Image 1 (cartoon, rainbow, N blue to C red):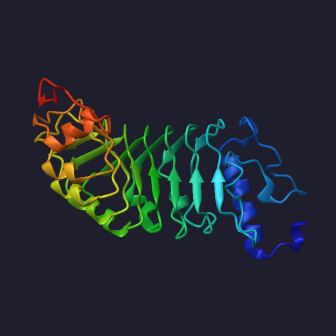
Image 2: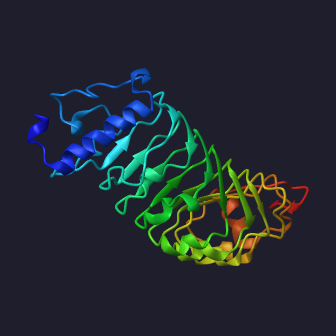
Image 3: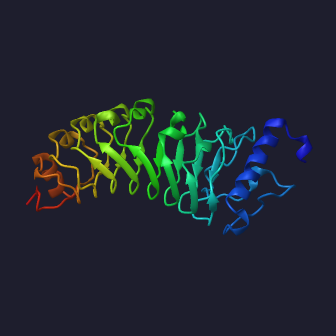
Length: 271
């Protein structure tokens, strides 16, 4: 079977075998068909829902989803790992090492490595060479980054950014205004300082903003947030954000259209 594969397909399969060995595949909860000589890699076990294809019509591997599958070990893959990848999800496992450089595929749209033990610089390892990214979920690791990073201006398709519970630092500025499709921003429980930038008011699709657990954040809730008609949740608890809440936001809260989580010792919460 393998000798009939084109070279690119053999390389793809080889890289998946390396991934299996690196992530201790023998200990996975489910590893059905992995490493099988007679079964296409497009039919190896995946945690992906049935409507999420593993390969495209040309048998290019596009979805690697092994979330909550007892993966472990040190991630050592390289930038050449499966350039056709669109979805890379290894969240809720026990992987460690540097941030995966293997997922800098130019086709990548979803990067999910939540709740592992990854560390190191995110941008420095080239992950953001994937300019088609729509979803970045790296929460629950020890990854270093900047809330003010210039890379956001190169991610115009970004919709979900969750870096909660990492080692992000720096001032929360307006760089995310370059991501007009954003629906969720999670910077909670890092070391971010400054205030909520007024530029958040241009993110007209934003539904949730979480900056909780950043005690060096201060300032007030900007009036510009009250123009965000889709905003349903704002979490500023565990910060020093203070002052009044814009009246339109209070009205949305009273109408059960929005939730505000705040320390009312600092914030003049809606009555």
